Image (cartoon, rainbow, N blue to C red; front, side):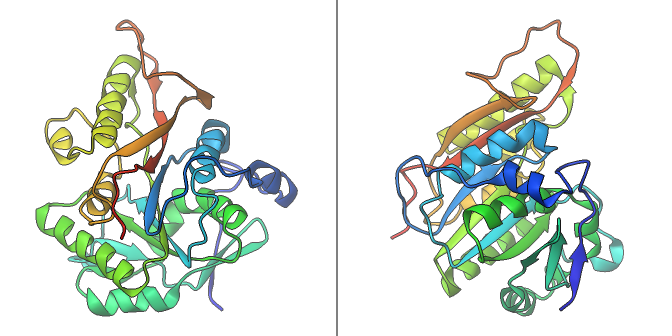
Length: 284
């Protein structure tokens, strides 16, 4: 079995298995049961910044028994010209080792997507070596849904035609098997001075909770979250059309009541939120 090796331990999460297990130990389920497919939003940063936020999202779906987890992560680096027109990437490897634990990928689904969307979905390991979001989320997936296979997909920003294809990819996944939990890794804003960061994070959270389009905020530079394409693609699904419930707001690892900064604060900040797809999602 071909396995990727972890690249981001120590910086983002503990390398020691015991310490990692302590950080990610499953907590009791909270919130109302819902049907599958469904989705949660989780942040990505070092565990001292996002561990509580990750738990908060996972707690709200801990009662679920998905047949698979689809991880929709951001791609911060540029797509190589030789890989275009592909813009969605899944690993070639069959899994990844994180702190001595093997996480297995859904290679059958990866092959299916690459066949069905052969110009736009590509199996390529290199993008996963650079991106930490998947690595730091996998131990939580293993803790809350042990033994469940994972399909990782990374995507940069999308134009209209790419977003339409991304939407089709998500639909194709649930047409094959609707017992899927989608995990969208997205921070509320890019690293910005405090006051601007708060404005961007507020606009992002408001758009999610109101069920409105994120792309206009990106175009107007009032939203700077790094993974809006995944949120838009999920939001275009019949089961995903609705509002998100913001269940946690965090800054520097501390839960806050709201997003706020004074106009004279200049320290650069990233806000993190936990969110679950709201009651309005119709997955009959």
